[in-house]
Image (cartoon, rainbow, N blue to C red; front, side, top):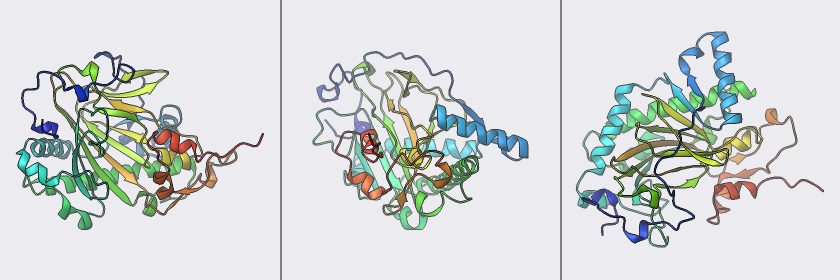
Amino acid sequence: MEVLMSNWKDVQSIPPNYIFPPDRRPGKISFPNCKDIPIIDLRKIDGHDDRSETIQQIIKACRHFGFFQVIHHGISESLMEEAMSVIREFFQMPGEYKSTYYSTDMNKRCRLFSSTTVYEKEPFHFWRDNLTHHCHPLEENIQSWPEKPLRYRVVVSDYSIEVRRFLLMILGLICEGLGLRPGYFEGELTKTQLFSVNYHIPCPDPSLTLGMPEHFDPNIITMVHQLAIPGLQIFKDGEWLGVKTLPNAVFVIPGLQLKVISNDLFKSPLHRVIPHATETRTTISSFLVPSTDVLIEPAEVALGNPPVYKAFTYKEFFAANSGKGWGVVLESFRQQIPE
């Protein structure tokens, strides 16, 4: 069978190497939706009082939930629709063309793969294809992007510029809320921008497999753009909960590096994806990522208490990953409390 799932036709049953052991599979299709996801309305940031209230809502969401939905975010609805449309076109193109972008080399600036970048070694495969490429700065990366569909580079470049503007705006509001100097997150802390698309074809039995592993985001901040097809889940209060999308809204997830900079004030949620039985799911995630050599440490202004984490570079953080998950990696940089 083809490695790329987007090339599969009329799938009637799940191949054995996509069926997870009982302790790792979802075990059911229907999950309760999370009812209390914070909703941030960015129309309110222009007036002084409304701006202060919105900032406090963002800080509260980062502290107590680690996940929030944003409406009236400034990214045009038509551009969001175009981006989703051109991505679907790419995955529906002939397999011969898509194979020219297939790679499991993490150093490639544009790569298409299935399941994970260790497909050949993993005992079970995740129900997804993924296209990931660098976005910022555009002039250094756009030539590595897919040439087809013909409008791909124009649409995705416009989209990535707007997403970066939006995420830096959110980080700017977080700066204000934490009392950090203006522009704290600009430059090396958000040097890299990744555009990552997960494409999940309909799955005959979603209770047996996963579209993505449960994971924490290791970066600074993430924006998730998805349609109303269920599948994204967060782990909260000891159970997996579905995430319902408002029309033309986006989700923001503080990454583990933001958790460190806030000196453990912020949360970063464990999340995963399960596929859908009858619908194709397409999700666009955008990540702002530090440069490899920038020092990550609790910001001084966040130090109402002693620093919870030791300073480290992003390169050191990645090198510490032994396959046990980013949450375990982060714990290895936690300060030891003297007995």
